[in-house]
Image (cartoon, rainbow, N blue to C red; front, side, top):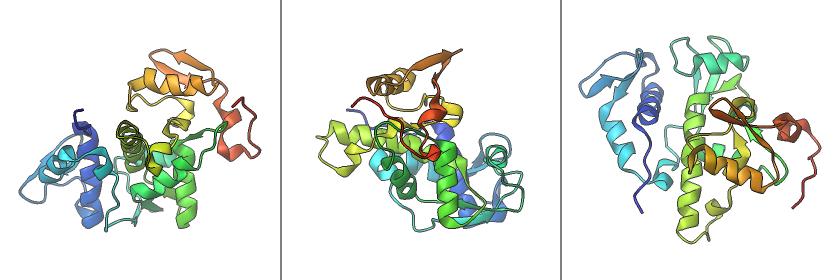
Amino acid sequence: MDVARLDGHSAGLLCAFIRAVRTPGDLGRRASAGVYVRGPGIGVPSQCEEELMKKTWAQKIEDKTTLPKVLKLEKRFPCYNAVHKMGANAGDPVVLVNPSEVLQVMASVPKGRLTTIVDVCRTIAQNHGVAACCSLTTGIFIMAIANAVEDAIASGGTSALAGVPYWRTLKADGFLNEKYPGGLEGHKRHLTEEGYAVVARGKRYQVAGFRTYLMSRGKPACRDS
């Protein structure tokens, strides 16, 4: 089986934030050799991206010694608009966490419940006592974790990672994640197997009445096992 890889755009954005953690004031500037620009004003270390593209999904979700890291939110951050919609403003503390923290939240979603990236970010932010969590890196880690789970299942499915129900983590507003293994159809299959109704919204899919099943709503909704 071919080694799954991050697409170049995701790898580039993640590398930009790795650089931001090392030198926060350097985000978006071409500061040294070996850096090129991908996207509007985002400086990306090409060596970092090349290393990410060579790694397996399991390697991509290994914790980094530089994380967690709290930064002051700036309007030039790639995650600014999404984090601002969650209630954070420029200057507020925002945490960048390791994949293991995202994995822990995803693994905690029981059958009959769902969560979204928004709720994942809010949970992580509360755990760290800050205004928000970086939704960009969290979204990339969610996607990488999903692919790592499928790799673990394909390898025999005996590890704890293989039992993580990643499909219960949705995008914002209950939409399915096209970057999950198998794309939208693969995500839809997992959800319909658990009894959820999935409806088409143009070219996207959304869980019907998804708010009813969110972890943040308190008492679990009953679903057939």
